[in-house]
Length: 113
Length: 113
Image 1: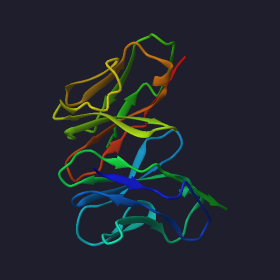
Image 2: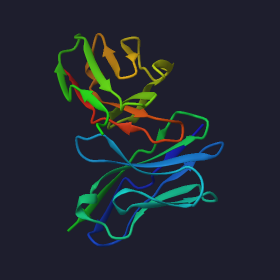
Image 3: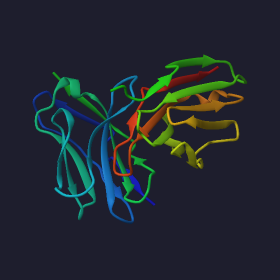
């Protein structure tokens, strides 16, 4: 079975400060890991993925995430947050030979001006 | 390129009525997913199609729910008869391969009165 935990329901940061959204996962084999962002009344928008290779993955809008196998984590980061980054963020995992994505419960990010 | 297109964006109807949600996946994508999103349960996978064939419908809540994919460019999710507890946002997503991300439409917000 596979699962994702996003331990923080909400993250609040000031504009210009670093932003981190935490994610830990559980799979029985090797994982494929994804981050998505959802703005109000919109669908989930793909940000970045880890499949294999370099543990530091760079994605859209200046976001990056670091895969840590020993800690089974895939935290999302942005060095300098913008007010427009305020949204709902989802981490997702699936096993390499599976099609089913397991999503975390989501973390609401609020960036204050 | 056009993304995943869903219609209608909003649907309000009375319980007992038939509801049909529509999805046009991204051209060339061979996998299609229907999800339901609620505050209480988060994102739930309802059904997964690969090459127009239903592979996993274990997430379909009841026999009142049915889904079809008559060709590579169109899928429907039908609820008959609808009930107030079916109120949710329904998303369609498509993907081009096993290690590729799912791309989501903007959803249909369904309200059953």
